[in-house]
Amino acid sequence: MYVASCPLRISLFGGSTDNPFFVKKYGYGSVISFASNLKTYISLHKDMLGYNVYGGKFIVNYSKREEIDSISKIINDPVRLVFEYFNIEPLTVSLNSDSYSQGSGLASSSSYIISLIKAISLYKKIKMTPMEICDLAYKLELQINPYCGYQDPYGCGIGGLKRIEFFNDKSIKYEFLETNFFNYYDAHLIFTGVTRNSRNVLKDISENIEKSKPLLDTLEQAYSEFKKENFDKFLELLNVSWIQKKNTSEIISSNDIIKEMDKEITNNNSIIAHKLCGAGNGGFFLVFSEKNKLNIPFDKVKISVATDGVRGHTL
Image 1: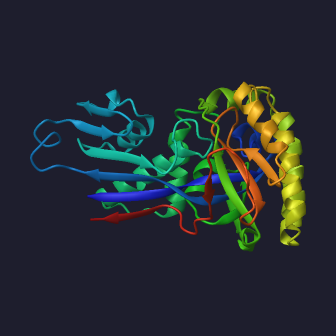
Image 2 (image 1 turned 120 degrees about the vertical axis):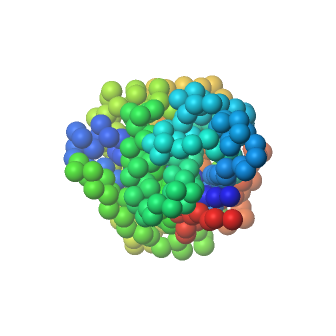
Image 3 (image 1 turned 45 degrees about the vertical axis):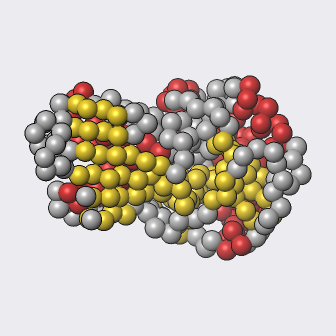
């Protein structure tokens, strides 16, 4: 059996400037994000006397179960894309996650694709570096979502808290940041109960990409304050960035549940800064508070930085 895991990424600043249409227009985009301790998991094996070998079937287990005799018939997009690329024979694959995967705003599709590529590279004995895996993951995800931002695979597959820069020649630059920020503040995710297809939001943002330009300016300010360890100012700018993000598309906070939660979180004195993860209009709110001071009636989970990115093992 071959198993692999990949973090889900948490974006702090610069979301939408990693959009390929933004990078093409302005020649540059950048984000500050971190790989979280929440992950996706893949297990992959070929049976010796069962559905794969004798039945000639692909078995795909996630929130549903698929028994399929052809890769092209697989409904699960990440599995179908990766299996087609590697021209895989019938196998059994199981997908699991520490978080809701549909419309989470945590780049779960990218994380799953990366985990799948890692597991299959082990199965086929192909040596691939984490960056090579991220490169391939982005190439594959564009087939199902042409608006997918660069930060999704490159934020998931490489661990740590980091600034990532994206250039028009498709080069990627990382700067890894100190995590002592988390010695002073807690980060929690709050699930909105709303899921959505990010493609519609990203399409709307892409069609009005000039509205995302202020997000890059705020990122530069936040980066400067972070490097000087002015963490209070850094979090103030996170709130500014969230307001700017909402201005890039009316869809981002159009849901009534999102609006009400956003208002309640804004008015909560225990929360210093917050934003909605990912493209918007669903998924998780990210909130920051002083250590052990969060007091809010919503269900929440504390998160931390994962120093490792994609990983895999043969059992």
